[in-house]
Length: 417
Image 1: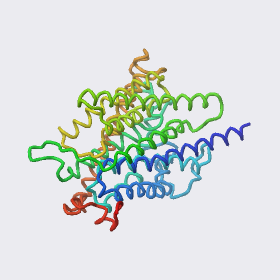
Image 2: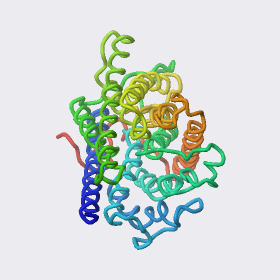
Image 3: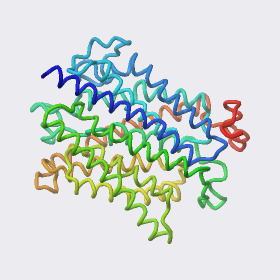
């Protein structure tokens, strides 16, 4: 029976990894649809680069950085392709693959915010940096058994807050990190040509295909059914069966509520429901529920989705119109802002430890501290990385290349002939 249970758990983990990998084309199509046709090959190419580079770098070094040294210290020991250090119950090759697809997701979030004006060569550099050390180090603090996740009585988190930091599937660890890096990268690049007029008013630059964007969001929605339930890493036994079923339900409810909230708000504010913003509202709900999908009730999931879907609209407006940061796909709002929101609302709405359920503010404090530390790390790395590249090699393509399209000048081929 133990062998059967282990086999079932392994197959479930691998199936979930396949679903999370399927999110990569979802991101690619979503980003391509929200941007102009002259840059489509460039955007698709970058999503391939994220996964190709991420797979190799995480195998050789990042996996050890994240899970090595038994959770001790600031960073694990690099494994140099040797997987023998890992001592978990599930096959290490399968667990590595599951973690690899999460690493690639963190890296690919950034590409949409920096689309249509980034040098491809420099994109390869910062994509490698995210997969090599930015994501694995903060992953070591949390999923790697490090100091933020420590639940021993004498650990820093327990002695300070009486609770460990909790992020079930990555609202903070994956999405907020990607969103913060996306915001810093877009700031370093500057806006696309023609995005703001002489008075600083924002001009809409429509994407070339809402069809592609919609298909991308549907694919991401499906992939999230591996992203969140798969993070249980087990399907055998009553506890695990119940857990993955509960997580699947809360994930779907938050996505639906996020889309509905954005649709209704844009209908009220603009006189017509915005389809493109509603697509991002679905993603906002998915990002928000990812931290606490195992701890909140179905009603709590709906509340998280509604809040994220509403805040998304105001966040996109504020970043675009007031901060004058040009994020073509809204990645900094969807993944950054809603990743932070979802983590904090877990501290409020977790049924067994949330503040709104009468369990005090210790767990909320742990969530607040954890998300702050993780995103400060991402921001510091982003500033050094993007502004360093900008100063040393140049981050942005020339004006003529941006005007005529990156596909021809960066790759010598067009997506649409």
